[in-house]
Amino acid sequence: MNDMANSINHPSTSDPDAARRGSAGVAGRRLARALAVAAALVANDAAASFLSGEALDSAANVVAWIALLLVPLIGIVVFWIVHVMPEKIAHKRHHPQTQAIHTLCLLSLAFGGLLWPIAWLWAYTKPVAYKLAYGTDKHDDYFDEAAARVRAEGLADREIAQLKHELDAMHARGPMPAKLVELRDYVTTLQAGPSPTERRSA
Image (cartoon, rainbow, N blue to C red; front, side, top):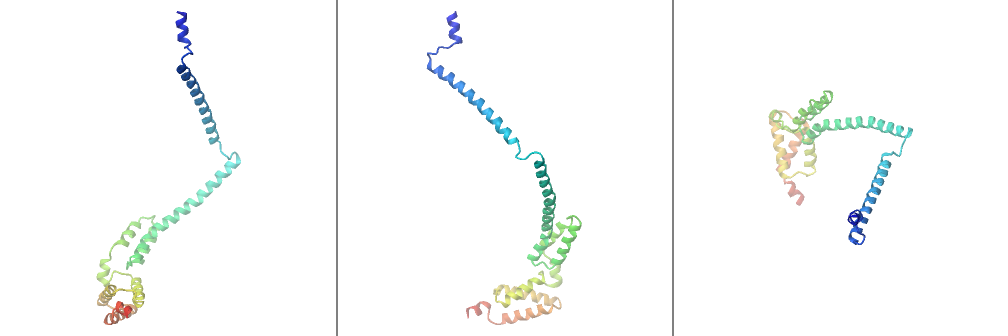
């Protein structure tokens, strides 16, 4: 019985596999303890700040002042950029009511942005009523740019014909500004002569 108990409590060291398993278990437990200690040390180091005391308070004050100054300034700039976008869109599309859209954008700033969606939609709408009244749906800047391009022979025949059609429609609605009358006469003379393509090839 004693021999059996001894054999149970103290396994035979003559078995090399059992010895290796025992030593591996001991090594694993030691490695786990070492890793736990290292993790605790790293956590303590990470928690500790490189600033402390008055230096930490000063750094916090600097960060707070920067946030208080920059965040409202950035917010105002972004708010302004977003609110002038309808005006930029209207100008790019040669909307004939660009000035009215610009005024609505400024009023929207005073009303906290409530009028901004109306200005956005207005910039993208096609001014059908304006065209019925004045014969065109383009701003005066469009005709100024077209005049500069047609004199520089930068317009194709199709674009010149479209410009002449718009000028004729405006002329049929009533008196036009002197610069548009001059442009219409110039385009009419241009269409009567050789085309820009033929003049460039000549």
